[in-house]
Length: 334
Ligand SMILES: NC(=O)C1=CN([C@@H]2O[C@H](COP(=O)(O)OP(=O)(O)OC[C@H]3O[C@@H](n4cnc5c(N)ncnc54)[C@H](O)[C@@H]3O)[C@@H](O)[C@H]2O)C=CC1
Ligand SMILES: NCC(=O)COP(=O)(O)O
Image (cartoon, rainbow, N blue to C red; front, side, top):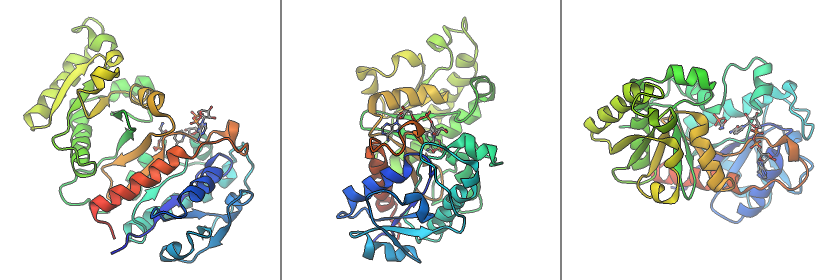
């Protein structure tokens, strides 16, 4: 049976989201990568692509080669290019919530999120630091596919490197304090399962970073590496997960080092995202593992500084759309 279309969320209407959605559609309109956008049409107007209002996701396929299919939201936006306005928060959030409902109902084969301006949503009272945590909450009561452990876990997947941060949207101080052996084992377990099931990597090799310089220099520069991370690596090995580390984070991303593993598991957000974005800013995709629905996203943010100038690249969004479609095929979604 043909796949249901992908649900694209609107993201921050003042950012580059609307223009890269339009560019992505122009490049994909004659392909199998059919999507519809959950948006207030006002957010997408002013770009070169034509829009077609649809009433249900199943209509997307019939209009996709001619227009961007748009499933309208109840909450309206007042877009202002280059600025994030917290008055648009209800619409931005509704887009994500409706995408999740449609994916759970099988009317969308997966969700691709456009970037949100987190600071603006948080100022409006939104209680989540990012999509990852919000999607985990929205899908909390939905059963996971068989033999899949619940996350959420963030994966940055690029052509040269896959990285997973154990701690995500936390200050460095709180991230360091919140690291536990159990948490590292949990994240690695979800990552290993997903790399095998979703990415087809048999017995994936996980390289686990240290937290401190030189992985703690045998306890001389911090105790977490020996007391928290090394026991996690041992516990993972005992579970049969192909894991090694803790490795000094500064020397685990050069070309020869990358050849030794399938994913780098990092203790901090920036340990994982700096190498991923440095190597492949325009090709890497942010994937949330350990959800009952498929979710991908471009690796970049709202780029308010270039919004509306016609220079934003849509490559990472296109990579996110293609990857979501591949994952849906692999999972055998409707
Ligand atoms: N998945 C999501 O919703 C994400 C949201 N964000 C949010 O985005 C906002 C801005 O974050 P920043 O740290 O400034 O990162 P950013 O990725 O928005 O921008 C960083 C730099 O990259 C450039 N850039 C970004 N996307 C580009 C594209 N498609 N083509 C060409 N150049 C591009 C920007 O112009 C800027 O110079 C923050 O609120 C952040 O939380 C950041 C990452 C992911
Ligand atoms: N730096 C990555 C990022 O902030 C994306 O987070 P999320 O919105 O996917 O949770």
